[in-house]
Amino acid sequence: MDKKTSEKKDFALQSPKGMRDLIGDEWYAYQGFFEKAAEVAHYYGFKPIEMPALEREELFNRGVGEGTDIVEKEMYTLKTKGGDHLTMRPEGTAPVMRAYLEHGMQSLPQPVMLYYYGPFFRHDNPQKGRYREFYQFGLEILGTPKPITDATIINLFSTILKDAGLKKINVKINSIGDADCRGPYRRELSNYYKKHSKDICADCRERLKTNPLRLLDCKNPGCQEIKAGAPESVGFLCPACKQHFKEVMEYLEKMGIDYEIDSTLVRGLDYYSRTVFEIFSETEITNEDGTKTISNLALGGGGRYDYLAKSLGGKKDVPAVGGGLGVDRIVESPDFAYHAPRIVKKPKVFFIQLSFDAKLKTFEVIEVLRKNHVPMTHSMSKDSLSTQLGIAERMGVPYTIILGQKEALENTVIVRDMETRSQDTVKIDKLCEYLKKLK
Image (cartoon, rainbow, N blue to C red; front, side, top):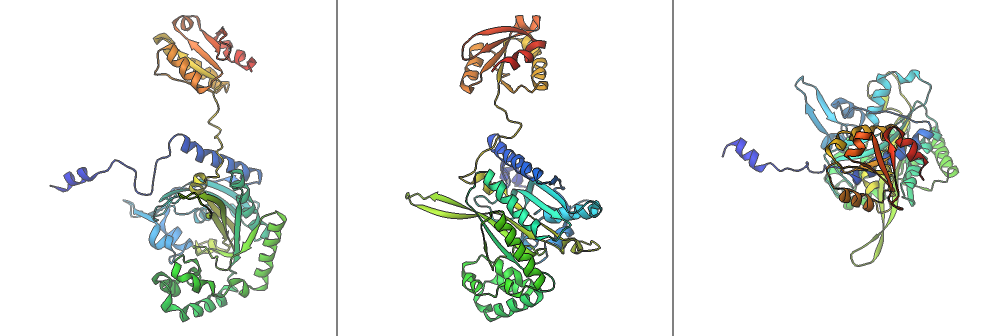
């Protein structure tokens, strides 16, 4: 069997592993969440940004960090015919900073506040709520070091999650210091782990050589006891970082945000400095045997990234803070509250067409309804009056518009009240005026 025949035989008509189609109501659930989240961001002064799905590979090598799992194991990178190395975006912060620098946003009134949403890509191990093509909603505030902006990002994410039905929100927060105080902490952390190098996993032994802070990001069960005894970054903070962290917590308390300090929280990306945070939801799960357990599910996180701009080639540091929410996990949560997107409105009328001449006139009537913002539905493939009336009945649509051959010739339609069965003949150019008078 030749190669082409083998490839044709092995081809599976399905989406790639860890990726999937969003169809109908599932797509509406995502779109409704994005619209609601964007509305919250808009009221707080954020503006939208849409970044390319493909960025230069170097953007993430420099920004996210070459010693991170994302860069070493998870990026989808391709080489173009022109020789460029492009990467499907694995996260949103580095592209936002690239756009900020590229478009000279430093000259705008600071801070610049941006929100975005859409698909991102990582070659990760697929499991429930985790996909290789996943969806995020992100917020970024660029151009200010003020602690209130750190608290604002956390507060807005909490607000968005509560609007989405996830009421029991837990925030974990830490400070990993800045360039002045992180060096001594990194040395102390390295010395501690060197004493336990024989007892940690292979990934941690590699992290010890390349990126010691990421030792605290390890999820291997065998490393947890050692991690619990590791030195805490807050004990090494310089006076400026201590004050910054103190003010962030004071703002969170004033905003009514419950939080706990997690000394092992560092996040998995190199660009973070000072504040880092993660947000969890507490969900009650009923097991197969009927018992109930409480699950804490990570829904998002982020932090401050004051040195990212320079690492990307900027002339000076740009103080900034931001993060992202994992929308797949939010939508799949048992507590998720569905919000219909603006495109979905409960139809007021069901449009019935009964002849070839009527179907020719269909789009004229639909356009009249659309331009006057009258939500409607129809079943264009059906010809029978009783069939179409039955569909309208099952959908609970209050009124039907009937267009037959006689009505098509006279430029009229019949409007039927589905509850009382009463009906009137109405001129097409008067239809919307008539419908607006109905309850």
